[in-house]
Length: 274
Image (cartoon, rainbow, N blue to C red; front, side, top):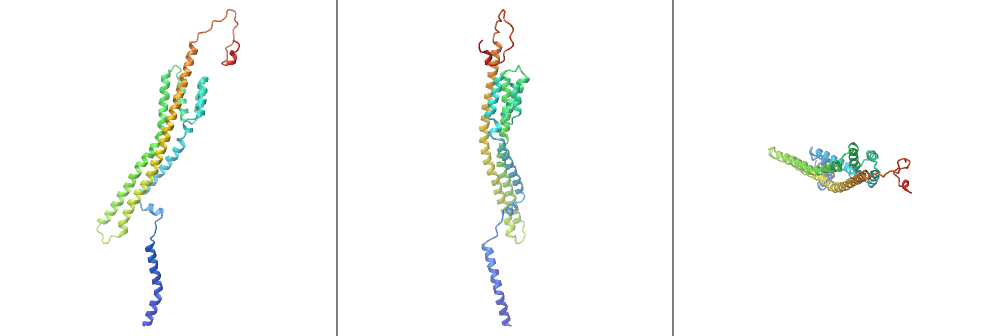
């Protein structure tokens, strides 16, 4: 009988030794959570933060497209506009602006359309129209940038909400009075609080960095837009001054026996020899 017991013990010794080694290895190397398990540990608040992060990426992508120099004003457009203004081709300038997608083109189009619809309008009324449209375009240029600041302010608050929910859950488990509250039940609420806080900061920090970048870029482009609008108004003033000087020029007295001449074209070569 003793021999049989000794044989059974000897047979179980390798299995017990292997089990002890596995237990020691598991204790020395605890299970590591992957990203999805970590996100799931944050609870339903993580879905809100995930939605906010998607909105942040979408807003940043739109700002990368809209807040750039080519979308506001270009030197080529200003050169073409000045040439048309000097030639007095306001209708052609209006048609040219409709084919452009720049914000400065919208300002010029609205101003030129006002001049064509109100030929007797003074330079002050024209300046007011240009300034009003310029203010509207500048507001549209900078309005979306503030969305990133809002995201940067809201995300930590949503993370703090998850922190409050997690800590409340932990203390509720403690105050339930159940016999033998498990450690997992106590720490799950604390882990939820920490995960949501970290997630809120993870969304807020890039949002504020993008806000600072696009705010500086939009302010620089607004300054360029203001300078281009001022140059446009000055060009219109010069055109109005030329029109007044041409209207006030006294007509020449015709010769007694001169034959009628056709009207001269606006070309300097036609004036040679006079």
